Length: 370
Image (cartoon, rainbow, N blue to C red; front, side, top):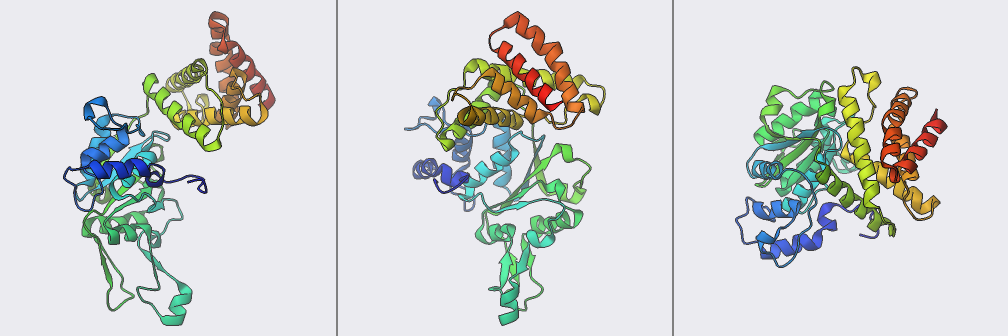
């Protein structure tokens, strides 16, 4: 993994997956590498009651029922659509499920306005077509078609970002479970093997961009992933991702629990203010998701490591938060300035400690950006 900027889940957790396969005696649907119970255990981690000889780390933090419903859906012949706000872990859950079920999470199509039908079906190697004509050898299968041929999980990210033509092509794949290739006379149908399914993700904030048709909705089971509001769960997610960053960069830096509490409380305050705001101008453009919270902390850690005293301070954390969340000027800066004067300043007087440095660091960052 040392020569990969970011290893996919099946490589990163290969040892765990190998071990789980070796002890898994449960029934496996289709061509699954693990049984449904072991897939759940891989995603959510082991507990003492599981009676395993080794601990399996928890990789996704959320309600157990969401994971179980997702697994049950993939064991049927329906597609799975994970829908929720940005930063709720939809893509990470899709990757983990694909890794556990198929040992391949890289068969991914990224939905954008530029995604075409070719991206989910096939295209052609032009030079080979010119030299030898159209054949299966000169065809370039899409990640979805490759998943069909191998009987594994294919992924479609940001489904509502793709156009209606692309969504319509996906209806045919999910319904008929084959792709026809009219350019060829022989061997012109690719049938999906047992085990093929699609995990799609959709951002609930993209509603209205390219709404899903009723026909496509019927081909998916929906699992809605809510924003994490439990402070303990959110702290576990942030800590998990932060430890991963520290290992990847070989950084020896401690994140004081008091600073993590400051970060969590600040995001909780800003979410509450956003929920009560009367207009979009009074809300930060940021979704204030757990993922953005992780980004703020990562930015502060890297800044401390490279330009600080290898110690994370509340001043650096505040500067990182302001720099990350102030996307619109002057609107976001005005919101943050109001928050700093109306919430952080009184809290600093009452509680002191890390809030003093957080107050000063935020003030300086806002003044610099104003």
